[in-house]
Image (cartoon, rainbow, N blue to C red; front, side, top):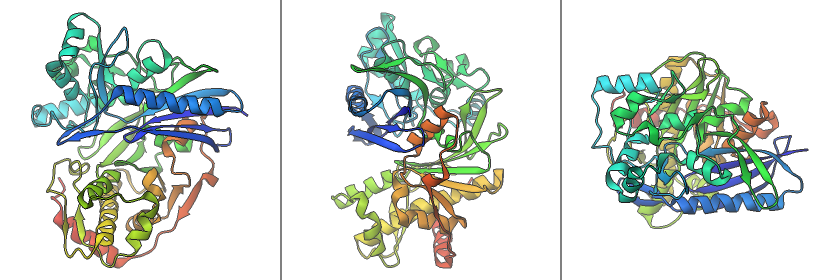
Amino acid sequence: MSLTLTLDCGGHGCQALLIDDDAEIVAEAFRPVASRVDGVRVEQDANEILEAMRAVIAELVDAACRSIAVAGLAVQRGNVLCWDKHSGDALSPVISWRDRRRSSHFAPDREMCRQIQAANGLRVSPYAGAAKLAWCLEQIQTVQAARDRGSLCCGPLGAWLVKQLCGGSAAVDDSLAQRSLLWSRARFDWDEELCRVFAVPRQLLPPVRASRSDFGEIRMERQSVPLRLLMGDQNVLPYLDGRPDPACLSINLGTGAFLLRPMSDQRLASRFQLSILDRTGSGVYALEASVHGAASALEWLEQKRGEGIPAEDIDAIAAKAGTPPLFLNTIDGLGSPWWQTGPEPAFVGTVEDSAAELAAVLESMAFLIRANVDAMTALAGRPERVRVSGGLSRSEQLCGLLASLLGTDLLRLRSGEGTALGLWAALQGRAVPGSAFVRVPTASDSSLEQRYQAWLKLMPPLP
């Protein structure tokens, strides 16, 4: 039996898993990475990320009882930085997709936004990387100096990790390149006009390849592991089916919640993103919805209360609540289908205790997802299957709310490791076994539906 090494560079840290031929996780390692949050600015230290990634790889390579056949790397999308193309030294912090420092500086008119989405597939938003790279070029002296001496490279975090882990040249895949808003879905490469619009010279960007490509060898002391897959972390979810299936809706519950529905055509929709999954033919895409306030909403509540909420205690605490207040969940701004800042986060109604607050926050996540599913169903029809993964999918309370609100059974990934198993399935070219999922039954709850309708009236009108 061979082993697959899956690597996930996420918002909270770096994770590595060894997965066998039966899709069983045989070993895992994790190292946290801190984020610096200052108002609209959200950054991470590039070298801290690299040290964490190397540490989890070394731990699993040392633990492996047999050789590792292949590796895949998933990276949180929209994260960007600048580096020296010769030495690989980071010249800027890693600027998170959550960062909104340029939101007031780049405000194209409606026609320009339409043209950008037509070329790229994604909506113009402050979460894309292009405007942040432009900020680095304008504001960071070390970046400007490297540009002047001809040694600057900039782009998605995944490209820099490829260079650092494999020791060769930087390269990025379509899915990560697309999130910058500088990528063309017509050419599967950087777009000269979009680079001009965002003031990021094309020659500073790394080469773009298909997600399943030879990205080099991850070099370790005991063995080298071929890196044959690089993708945005959410883009791997449809591969839990082996290949993207338009009948299945994937919901991943992490820092944000993301919903991906593979499409049989390239249909642009103003309320959603059109995310690249594979460049085969004219491209395979998914309709994508974004809920920004998932685990980040729990972090907001922890900061408000001045104390942590252990993940293993979430359900037990929320179960103690009576009727919770309604929570206007606008953490990190409203994603789809609104795409606006929205009102300040707030509880509406009587807040009895901390358990009621937690229950309201969980409920708000389910409400945001329901609004997106309704809007997506109007475009693509009702899905035959709904699969749920991610760290927060371990919450039976949240999954139960979702099943009731969506009116359908859910298939919850037992391990929660949607990104890792999606990488495994994409590399193997086959679906994750059905035994890896547990069914969450739906239940009719008229009071929950009434609360959703009341909450919806408190939110901004849908465009």
